[in-house]
Amino acid sequence: MDTSILRRTPLNDVHRALGARMVDFGGWDMPVQYSGVVDEHHAVRKSVGLFDVSHMGEIEIVGPEAGALVDRITTNWAAKLKIGQAHYSGLLYEHGGFVDDILVHKVADDFFFICVNASNQDKDYAHMRAFNRFDAKVNFVSDAYAQLAIQGPNGLATLQKLTPVELSAIKYYWFTEGSVCGTKARIARTGYTGEGGFEIYIPPADAAWIWSEILEAGREFGIKPCGLGARNTLRLESKMALYGHEIHASITPLEADLNWIVKFDKGDFVGSTALRQQKETGIKRKLVGFEMLGRGIGRDGYEVQIEGTPAGWVTSGSPSPTLNKNIGLCYLPVEKAVAGQPIQVMVRNQPVDAKVVDTPFYKRPK
Image (cartoon, rainbow, N blue to C red; front, side):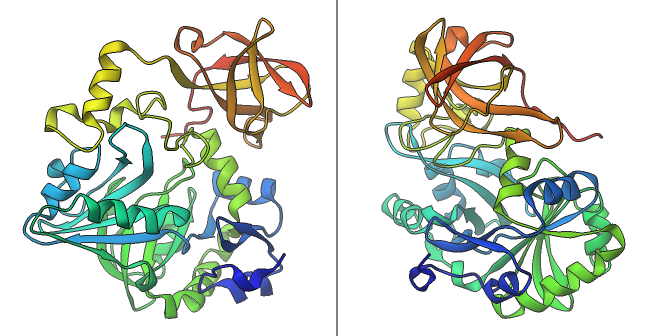
């Protein structure tokens, strides 16, 4: 692999020193695993894991009409956010397909902080600017932030050692301005694993030593550094969409079973006309979960059949370390997208039995 052309996070040398297996992930040199995907997955489900997600992009929208711009370009209702609250949302094209899925944080009435997918950040920035007819500025600030995710039941106890902020007071999908290891940080109770935990935004120059401090703070809990492999199996068990798989430019939120992030009541937004029309006529396909009954794993892109006829495709598929089953997500005709529906996944050109199941596959204990 020619790593000279890949982008690197501030922790690249740290990952290599830890012996991580590195891969090209959307143009970034990223760790896919350290001790092993299953080992890292179980660490997050049972205790705590630490992820470098500094490849993610950050965009700020500031100014008197920042909120109006955010509501124009996103599907969820930003005007209803309180200061210090975040939500999951969609950035759409006019035809209703996804530009990206994003996290919107309301820092102040005139300041919104948006976390976007790594490979989409330049495209997202251009898209946001293209629709800016408001008294607001769109600022590309990815280089100003490194991002670490501390995920799992012992994530709070680990991070609490390193911050004066009372972490238990931060509710799920809320955030606060504070410090970690004496360094200014935005601390958000969010994540992409289906577990409790935090994502912290810190200056890139401080990322490497704060990473080390978190590993030391979590040592008593058996903390593990985690790569993209475990991040993928964790989010799949929790039915969290991955851009380029479950969602992309030709998939709408209604098809992706993300109706809950589409707020028609707020008025027009980019893509709303197309979505309203689709809602009226009815969607033709829908994202569902499945589990394999026969031997084999339904991998991304595999054809899905019903009674020998092509019916859809797998968007993500993997063994589930938590459930000890082979699971996946796929698109099916809406009338067949019901739990219990028998399907066949074409694994190496052979049909393997599977069935549609309810999702999420895993829900963390309260």
